[in-house]
Length: 487
Image 1 (tube, rainbow, N blue to C red):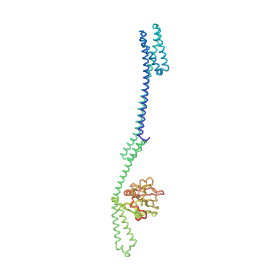
Image 2: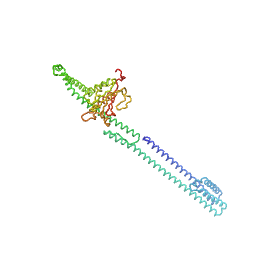
Image 3: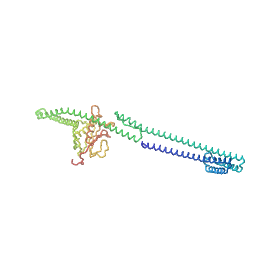
């Protein structure tokens, strides 16, 4: 039984049953005392009959009146009747045979009385009556004394039993109150101490050593509040870091924009110079012209990246539109051809019809960050696999959120060393990185997480059984026509 309420109810039911039982015992004792009182009344009735019989005996011995003799005979008959009726009570009070002995004494007394009535002038017969009468009175008084002692003993026993019962009930109530206070007050005191620690900024979980369901539920609710508070605290820290990052990116982008514009303008002027453009007039070769074109193209690409940074830092309006994943991945890989390690094999398996609803620049930033991370993890040689598939309705792997509409999973997997299990839950935190100092800011995966959530999707990561890490990005599908159908 692990319910505090059930235990309290059980304890009070047990106490109620105990009180009822003690009350029943008290009633039984009272009945026994009442029986003693009734036995005492029988003895008193017999003693009264005996005394009345002796009173009329004395009157007859003094006055010799026939009426006294009749009353004497009437009370003698009453005494015989009481001895026959209450023989068991007398035996239980004075011992076995007490009633029979008393009847025998009464018989001898009556015989002596009859002899005296026959010869009233003989003094010896009168003396015999007096002796036997005194014997009857003495026995009656002894029976009365025994009856009083029995009644007093019964009352004393009842008093002792009553006091013992009250003592037992008081002790049980005290023990019950102590046990309940210990089971309730100690956990609540621990919770109060932990709340004071929370007020001081220590978000430590509460672990109650109590089997009671109510207290366990209270501790679980308290820990849930702590978890929620900690989560929101992390969210606030992340927002503060992101705001600082936006300010930093905005400044860097503005600083880079001017030299990029100068480089682009210089390349354009050089290309339009007649001496540079004329073939065979100047020592400029086709190789030189290609270099200038590359400078111009790379400058434009750098300006696009800077523009993307400004868009991100300036919270550019989110504009989702249908995006073909195959085209987007192909374009991103072309941008990163200079970052690709010489010994890395890239395999892309994305059907042409897989289209997602996304903001293209933001989604390209997601793919770019994931691919760059994969290249860094692979090192000098390895394999990068990029594939996409229609998302299943029942997610079974990390990072697969349950979509409310059709979705597409974009998977980026590498053959690198993977992510340490103790760090895998933190890879999307801002400024967290597993790379060496100076080789990563810890913001790439955080930006991926933010952009994917902005699209209403989710992203997760797990280590592959054969080695390496696999990132799975789930995004809402724009359209999913059957393979082979016209897009």
